[in-house]
Structures are given as structure tokens and as C-alpha cells.
Length: 429
Image (cartoon, rainbow, N blue to C red; front, side):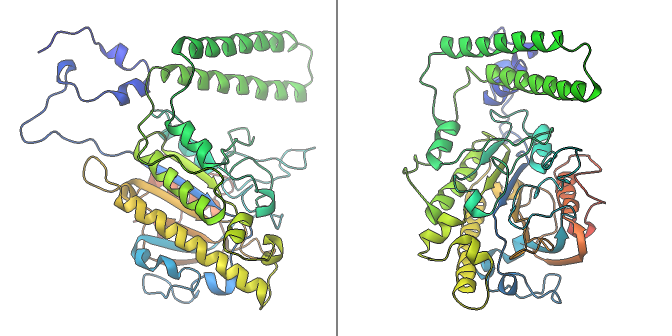
């Protein structure tokens, strides 16, 4: 045995440091001749959301054909090779939704925008951020949000990504594949000492702000005290993030399993590379929670569709409907490609990345101005869901029931999310 000064306290100082270490015999690990036991791969969660819904006449399977023996619709036909590995859910909606072109603002929260008196728009925590609190503590990035610069023209509504924090505030997203690649895999150009100094400076600023906020705390009205309490919580959240940044300063980023994306990608090519980056981030355990607020406008442009996305969403038989159907087909082709990638990526224990990912795909809008029956596809083995089926749930089942079922499926013991009324038992394997 090699002598060393390692101890448990030093190993767990930062969870990232522990994860980055190999199984070293000299600090207590043993390699057996029969082959070392491989740890169970972690759970991961991904949410992919798009605006403007789908072509309801050709995307949804026949509501009378439920269970595993159903015919894939025209819009889902590109997913045929994965039919046994995804479930289509009909009947779900967010009961408080009232905005016809806010395809993602409340999709993962189920919030009532008028819940806070005096505010015309309030939100609550999104399901991905609930998952991140449990799955994101041992990775460099607690969660990663992918977005696109044309969110408004793609029917998404307010927000900076699909994610909303515990205060119902928008969580920023990264808009380009190049930007995301460098965040995940590129080393900082600054020397370690300068990065440490930058964190120390940020902490110093936080301390000064906190001192000033406490000074004015006395004599405030209840409303102002509530606002200040939220402000203090925001300060604590920043402190938590800075502490995590500090823990990971000396841990090198993972080597990228793909090359740097070309700049300027748009539409279908952009979404494909974003999907590749999602698989790479999960494969390298850089994060275990990801969301992607997808573009629609640039997707149509890349398909040489001359119809504007808003006009397309108000389709009737003819050019607009054909544009909508083209969009559906392209999106399904891209999703099928991502599933291919997840299945082909192997874990250390020989299983596939797909086996440990819980992935949801859909929109808060069914079609045109309809906010019921949100298009929903669930795939991946990470949440222990019953896949390979078509479910037609009772009309206006809370979409958050589906999210609650996913949360419990990945091991998070919570009884409520958004406007949920319980789990979807038909989804449980």
C-alpha cells in the first residue's frame, strides 16, 4: 500500500473533486481480479420544448387506439424505429394557461400567472429545477439551459429559457452551439489566481450589498419585508453558486466527445448540433439536468418554407397546413436522431445513456390557439416509465401530473408540483 495523506474530509471538500478522481488503490479502493464493480450510472433529465404546437390532424395518434397496439401518425412516422421506446400522452394541459402563443413559459411550472396580487405575470419553479436540486449537486453545472435567439418569433412567450427558479424568476439560457460548447468543455484563459480573485471580489460585493440591505430592514411594511426576504434568498443562491464555482476551480473540464460546432448554424442543423451537445454534456457528466427551448422560425427557414411561423400556426388546409406538417416531420426526425445518439452512447457498466435518461418533448400549445391536450412524448429509461404506448388520459388532466410522475420515477420523493393532483399510474412501469 502506498502511503499517503488523503483523508475523507479532503475528498469530500467538493463533490466535484471526488467525482473527478479515479478509483485509486492507494486511497482505499481495491481492484479485484474478477473485475471491479461498476457504479450504477446516475439519472439524468432532459426537457425539449417548442412553440406553436403541432398539426393536430396529423400529429396525434388516433385517440381510440391506445396501449401498445396503435398506429403512428404521419407527424410521428420518423420515430417508427423507436416506437417501443417512447410513449405519447394525450389529454394533459395546464389549467391556468391563457396565452395562445406562450408555448413554454408555464409548460414546466403549471403556474397561475395571476397568483401574485398586483402582478400581471408571475411564475413558479419549473420541474427541471426541482430535479436539479436533487441531481445537480455532484456535477460541475447544476443544470444547463439551451435556448435560441428567436424565442419570441418561435412562440415561446416570456422567459430566458424553459427554466424558472424557486422564486419563479427566469433562468438564463445559452443561445448558440458554439457558446454552449465552450461553456461545457473549454478551459478558462485566466490563470487560477485571477479566477480565485474574481470569486473573492464577487463575494465581497455580496457582503457589502447584504450589509446595506439589513440596515434598511427595520421599519418596512410587510410587503417590503417580503420583497426583501426574496432578495436575501437571491443573495444566498448566488453565494451557493460561488461556493460551487470555487470547488470546481481546480478540476479540469471534461474532454469533449465531439468537435467544436461551426459558427452561424441555424434551423435544422442548429437543433441537431444542440442535440449532440445535450448527449455530450450528459455523457461526460458535466450536468444531469438540461432543457432546450427550441427555435421554430429558423427551422422553417432551413426547410425552405416561406410561411412565417405565426401564420403557419393559424393553418387551414393548404400552404400553411403543409408548412405545419413539414415542421412536425422535421422535429420528429431530429428527435429520432437524438434517441439514436443516446442509445449508441455507452456507460461504464455497459448500458446505454438512453437507459438512464428521462426525456420529455412537447409544447404548452396543442395547435392554433388551443391550450388543451398539450403534445407530449416521453422517452428514455431514467424515470422507470412504461414506454411503447399511447395514453389517452381524461380531458384536462394536469400536465404537472406527468411531471410529478417523472420526478418520482427518478427517485425524488415529492407529492406536488405546480397544479398536479397526483401521479399518472398508467405511466408507471
